[in-house]
Image 1 (cartoon, rainbow, N blue to C red):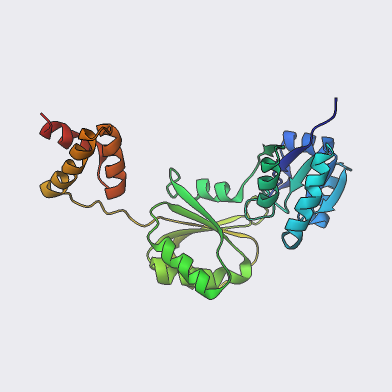
Image 2 (image 1 turned 180 degrees about the vertical axis):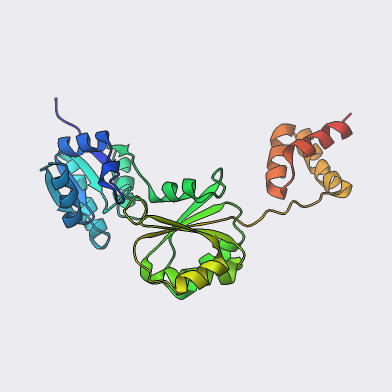
Length: 282
């Protein structure tokens, strides 16, 4: 029986080599080919694990061209593991284009999960973890960067983003200007490594403290979301949307479905809107 090509997305340690999973080691030993963001970095890991598979480069500037080559290998029945310098390929690293094309071509895509700087920083931050948004790296161009700051100012979910050491001070200043100096932030540095650090405070304090420090290492920032202020609803508010719900339900739509849609659209409590509807439909 002819072997079918399979694409594995293998998460590698973000610092501490002990974080590699047993499954990741097995997959790296069994595949025909390893596509690496940085072959030098990956070969260090493979040497540590005593793995001697073939390695080719797969980096951002050549992502489209190399994706075509890797698809050819998949069509030939090859088993391929994609790895980034650290963490999960495709998450702020090359990989998503290849995954999209491989999936569209009908190849099996298998994630091999492991440690994540995003989740490690989030769960250790002390900020809410039930709802969060991952921003990755902010744009480098000033105009696009400012637009992202503005968009994040009203974000109610906890925000996680990555930043390079040489842009950390600029980013903290921009965030403080747009999100406010009182917004809580956690600056996580060198996660899982020897000099791992979690700094906690406000954006205003962060600007002052980190402007005086020598900035080294890899950084993940975790920011509190924008405080949600619940809007008081009046009888007139409920009455106006009651009429919409009533008209649409008479026209054949399910009342509960319409209530859910209106509540989400207008920021109402679905339960309260439903109770109002029932009370006035008697």
